[in-house]
Image (cartoon, rainbow, N blue to C red; front, top):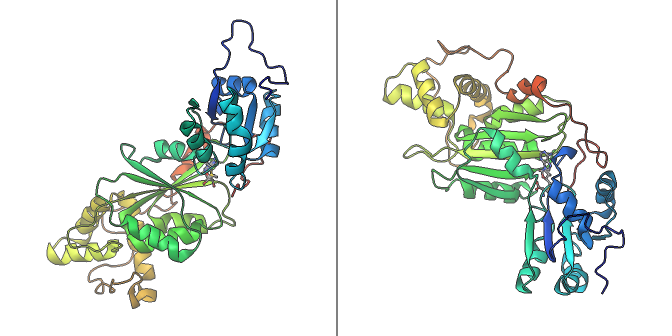
Amino acid sequence: MALENPAGAAPEKNEQPLAPGLYLVATPIGNLQDITLRALRVLRLADRIACEDTRQSAKLLAHFGIGTPAISLHEHNEQARTADDLLPLLVAGGRVAVISDAGTPGISDPGMLLVRAAVAAGVPVFPVPGANAGVAALVASGLATDRFTFHGFLPEKSGPRRTALERLATLAPDAGTQIFYEAPHRILDTLSDVDAVFGARARVVLARELTKVHEEFIRGTAAGVREALGSRERVRGEMVLLLEIAAASPGEAPGRSLRARVLELQRTETLSEKDALKRAAREWGLGKSEAYRELQRERAAAPARKACGDGRPGHPAPDPAPGLAPGPAPGLAPDPDGREARAGLKRESEREAVPAPPWKPAGRERL
Ligand code: SAM
């Protein structure tokens, strides 16, 4: 078996040769500058590059002048490719680099089976870290980073998706942030499901087009983020959905509405509407303007929900809102231009004008 790289990528003068083994190499998720120097070296010196899509990766490799032979490794051939080609090459002392279309291989992308086989065969496995959409979204989200769970994609169909979300309702109060990959054609339905299951208990961040020209973060409740997205002509781009779910108040069923909580506080603690909303906002982890918008939204939706409670299974409609007059809550300034809900847009001026990678038009879906 030939282990030589026919592209002639011998180590440069004083360059360490590449140790034999399997390399999991992260590639950019939109911004070419996110390739690492080590990634380039490993890709250049490997005997083979196993690519999720050889045509996609050809553009990246050509851009960086890398001529290492490529071989496909995708969800439909990973098992056979591992057994027939890549593992024998690795066991014989070869160097194999794995890359996906974008980001870190093995994360909602091929790689795991090959890594398992390599580990089982005693082949050294080396991570070559770099871009990952989930972690990039998390660190800039403003949600908890001390604990988080990555779930990959939610189920496509509404029933199983609801069930998956309902399972999260039993999470420990300090479970941190829940991270999902999502597709633009499903995001509105998914946000409806998040709203139905958690209501305003879920702080939501939608991270779109990370590291690209139109990068944005939309923050708020599920309903607020849905409204911001739904008002657009088209929902597009690659996106990560992050949820931080506040603990239910004692005796509170998951998915309870903010409006119901405000009413309860007014009734049981004889708080004014303004103070009740302030308190509920704190409990839900919302800013004052976000809470006010959520209350308005729930009020607007109330008549439609009358016949079937508040729209959530097992949750009767709350009592009519005594003293909850329409219009801004006293002392709570409305957010007339929706600035907070579109927090991501604030960053327009700070954003680097980074071109989409040449091998993939910005906003292209990879599903
Ligand atoms: N392995 C990749 C990683 O490390 O992030 C993820 C691959 S997964 C097949 C692709 C999904 O990741 C997209 O549907 C989207 O949810 C998310 N994603 C990838 N690039 C993104 C970006 N630039 N901005 C936001 N989300 C992105």
